[in-house]
Amino acid sequence: MIRISKPIIEEDEINAAVEVLKTGYLAQGKKVEEFEERFAEFIGVEHAVAVSSGTAALHIALLAHGIGEGDEVITTPFSFIATANSILLTGAKPVFADINENDFNINPDAVLNKITHRTKAIMPVHLYGHPADMKALVEIAEDHNLLIVEDACQAHGAEFGGKKVGSFGVGCFSFYATKNMTTGEGGMITTNDKIIAEYARMLRSHGSRQRYFHELLGFNMRMTDVSAAIGIVQLAKLPAMTRRRQENAEYLTNCIKNVEGVVPPSVKRGCTHVFHQYTIRVVNTEISRDAVVKELREKGIGAEIYYPIPIHKQPLYQDLGYDETLPVAERLAKEVISLPIHPAVSKEELKQCATALREVIYG
Ligand SMILES: *Cc1c(COP(=O)(O)O)cnc(C)c1O
Image 1 (cartoon, rainbow, N blue to C red):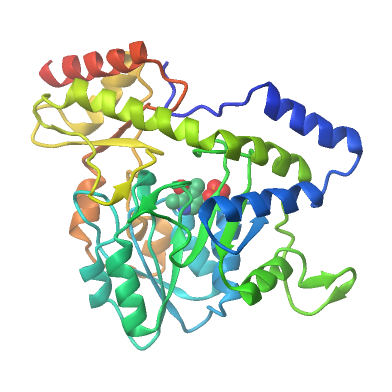
Image 2: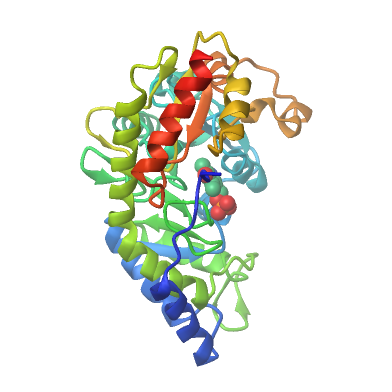
């Protein structure tokens, strides 16, 4: 099976981790500090705060800005559940705005329609590695005095108008094993606000900035030095790994662009797409989307659906009383298929993917 994702761990990551293990200092320390400095520089912000996961990054970023009970945060229904759940975890209410068909991201006009006197923040997701429309979203945020919390968990290094995502608002990244760079599990918050960074550092470590002196209620959401050491090596390799993703995506698009009923992913002007996923839409084909996925898998292609059920349709959200219809998200959830283009996929394998797709669609 050509896997949909594969962490690229080489000798240098292994050596970096072993080196930390040999020191005997495993918990959050010097390596975490170094990783934070390098990541902040990479994104182009003043501060980065390492945490235990992308979910923790989103949760802490919201709490550090005082968001909670009684507040509303507008987000996309078409994402991994962690996006909206991070809002629920603070006690605030996720409000879903529908998405664009062409880039799968939150639609700024739909956001405008959902603003109320309770709205405190907008949480766009740069889904699959394609930036959301940050120009329109920043304008809306400025006009309505709203915070922007960017879920950049799939978009390390993606750019909008030459500026890295995660630098428009407060940025949240994940280093889970399948992401564009990994520490196994891990996350990062990026911000230009010194006070927010300090508050986030306290929240990740039991509300403490001085050992055994606790000023507020926090968590244990720290990163280990072992993870950070791996992250430092991965970050250095990220630009090359991203180029491979982009080359693979371009190659695959050239192979499949004439297949009837298949819409390959596109990149909007002014955007740099880092292709966390390469996601096609299957429209008006005789064979159903689910049958396409099943047959591709039988042919050894690790096709996946991200995401089969929009968040507002998940049982958790149905139980919470979400009963609206978000037509674009609901339709796209039935059309999308992601195909493997990660850096370890070869040209030969991309050709296999294209051939398999052609055979499946034309029967
Ligand atoms: C992976 C992911 C998260 C959560 O990150 P974890 O590190 O798994 O907690 C949040 N949002 C999106 C869009 C993701 O892809």
